[in-house]
Image (cartoon, rainbow, N blue to C red; front, side, top):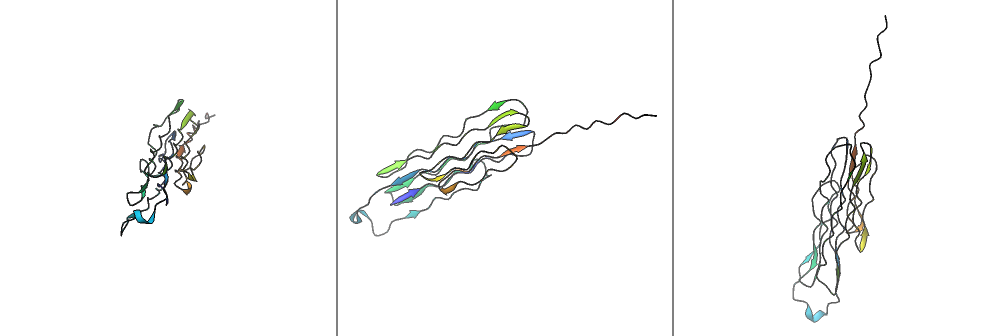
Length: 173
């Protein structure tokens, strides 16, 4: 039996000067060879839901097969950066711990966002899973995309609002 937890959502960025957020982490993985004699008459199977990119702090769901195999879902990207123009960077989100199984591993962490100036920066990529890939970071205004495969975390979003200053020409008589 193999299981992977759902990948988590990357954080959404609202319109502002420059705002970028980390991605969601990858879901965990677990597997176990289960002798038929160990199975009950009924075993509950849960398939952990992957989450939609752009829904911050929403965790992926756990996947399990009875109490024998559990793969933990990923953690959602956090809203960490406020609007601004000054240089700042943040860490990504740590991945979930290993679940239950003969082989069990946690999901990969997401990457953190960075802002260099009011118009230069990038969001954090989504975390990796054993069976899927996290979405890439963004350097232009766009929401984070969904992870690929099973359990990959969504990328974080970036919003860049260009502020134009218009100067009125002098009036000549």
